Length: 434
Image 1: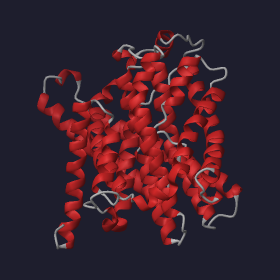
Image 2 (image 1 turned 180 degrees about the vertical axis):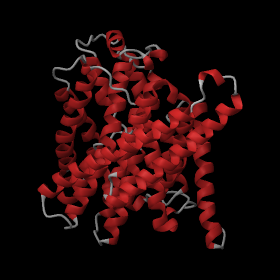
Image 3 (image 1 turned 30 degrees about the vertical axis):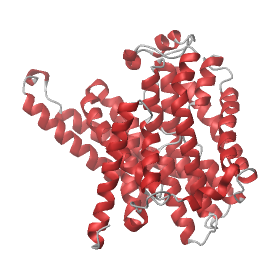
């Protein structure tokens, strides 16, 4: 590494971007899930491997940057969230609610009894592990070409639970550190942060959508390519400016309310602009992918073998237990829903943890270390072990399982199909789509 501290910090970012891009290239050539290779690259170059990338040298400045990039990823997911039809809405709501209750309790119990974490941090782990990452789920869904009904259930589950789990994990962390009085404080602050975040995000998204509508070239001027390009660039700049101000403002007002706000703003913009959002969506998606490309290796580089190795077989057994727990939870949540047994099996198997899980674990471990909590490294190690196993095992085997269950190969154009049509193609016919 260079002797000059500023040059050394710049080199950390340069190596992270370059190694991430090489991992994405390897994923494209090999057909392996990109996130698996991004994590492996981070482990190789970081504290667990060659120790070339040392994220701790970036200091506390890394925390707000990670938050801004994560908000971009969630905003991109919100742009594409469509929950048209009562059956689809009921399926997502029932799955999210049941997983929130049973998943939190089961994950905490496994972390305590199997991995050996104290109860206070086991609850934090249970909350973090609730999230399934849309940044990993969505590429898998596209690769498997699932029916739109089933794909939207998987995508919406991750997109809703990621910000909620981040808020809940923060509050449980504060409870563990003695900053909150009890469970009533946790419940009230959870509702407050999610509610304020969703409300402010919806208002900001509506205001942004109204401005973007005015910037769209009129149909009569459709031939003016340079005008369209200019308006597209300005739309992107306004979107990023609004999103980052929204996120940072919400975080200053109520910590962790920025993530629900980012999702809410994306949903409102996507619904308001509808098909006209496709150009903006393409630009945002590229930036979100760039954020993932640098964040995954950078966060994985901060994990050391000293945090992973003490977990031993107990840590692996805990993660495998989480996967079995998800099967039981999905089967319970799927009672009365228009999902057959094969579809429930596939949904239960696809539960990779993504970038928000990694970011939350890294930031929380830093706060716990500053507070002198001895098990901070074990918590971060268990979270990253969960990411590695669920992404690696699930990402590699999910396409094979979808093919064996006869659920792969739906029409790729189906992302814009009516849920009734897509559900019929999957063998289940919703009875009440709006």
